[in-house]
Image (cartoon, rainbow, N blue to C red; front, side, top):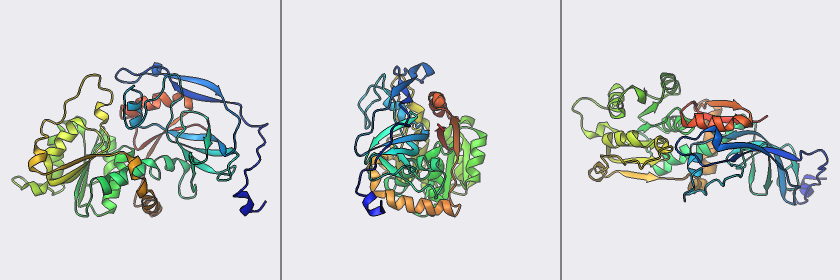
Length: 363
């Protein structure tokens, strides 16, 4: 069959040797506060026969991400809540092992949104073939995937980054934060400061090119942020407010957001990506006590969801591929092996156990 005819014909599938069942992780109960292993259930389910236009993917790796914690609550949000006694979902990468779709052939490496299971049946349009020669496949869950686009869109579009800006990033050793800092440096930031949760993570941020970093456990965030600005020459005793930060990329909320507001320059911008410090809270949390400063400083605080910025995907992919190729951006991954360990990987992620992207390998 020629390539031309292959693109128009639905491929035949020999289903005799295909797996009949898949292991999957279900949400057994909704967490109250911090998730525990008992909130999850590992079970087995049948794999349906492929219909025309569908593919069967053997997942090789899956992503666990902080936003998943919100979906475990039965509340209305930008993403529907996970259903009880049904498989969770999320980013995954895998290999097509059977296809009734002219858009995908057996052997293609694809990314999709049906993680938390060994095998996934997907319709056309639900999977995207990726070029695995650009980087290892798990990169398409992180630096070359939604994580990277989140960092790029949040910095460049939401926070309206400009060359010469001073940028502060919280959870800076995480999957998104570590990329935000490096992208900012590549786009001409004057200074990039990051906060992280351990001395090892602080050291890693300095290796990645951050101008300063601090461990938020070592003291009040506001005090440490001001000290970091002084160390980098961005602030001196008695200096005007022009010696603060121009952009804050917020992954944490809470004390970090309050500290950033205190040192943001006039017309400073905040990209509100996440609030991981509050995800497990069972009681109402208070907002920044100094929010009124946003009025006089004429600040912009803007929340965002990466799905609204898909129009930047092609632009981002080209730049990130180039940065990765020439070593201008590096990315870390923390690997956990085995689907049965995915719930614990997620719990550990919320506790800050990862450096870079937390990835669960399934092969």
